[in-house]
Image 1 (spheres, helix red, strand yellow):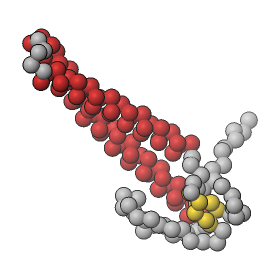
Image 2 (image 1 turned 30 degrees about the vertical axis):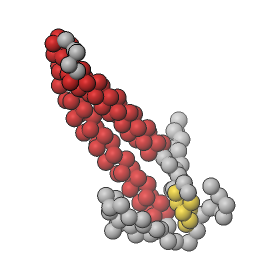
Image 3 (image 1 turned 180 degrees about the vertical axis):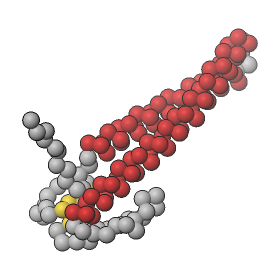
Length: 136
C-alpha cells in the first residue's frame, strides 16, 4: 500500500519548522527556570542569616546549575542553528518553485531578501506562490 506524502506549499510553515520552533521555545523556558534557580541559590549564599549547611548545599546546587546552564545554552544555540537551516531550506524550496536563484542568500546575515517572480507574493505569513489576491 502506498503512503501519502504531505504536499508542502512554499511559504507555509512546515511541520518540521513548527516542531523546531516548539523545541527551541521549550529549551529557552528551561534556561529561564535554571536562571531563576541560580539566582535563588546565589541569594542563599549571600544571605548572612543562612546557616553554614544551607550555604554549603546552595553552593553545591549552584555549581551543578551552572554546569547545566552551560549545556542548555549550547542546546539553545544548536536549536537556533537547526531552525535557521530549516528556514533556509524552506526559502530555497519557495525560490525553486519559481526558478529564482537564491544561492547568494546568507542565512546568518540579518537582511531582507525579496523574491521577485510572477505570481509570488509576500504575505504576513510568508511567501505565497500562485495564490489569488487576498489569499492568506
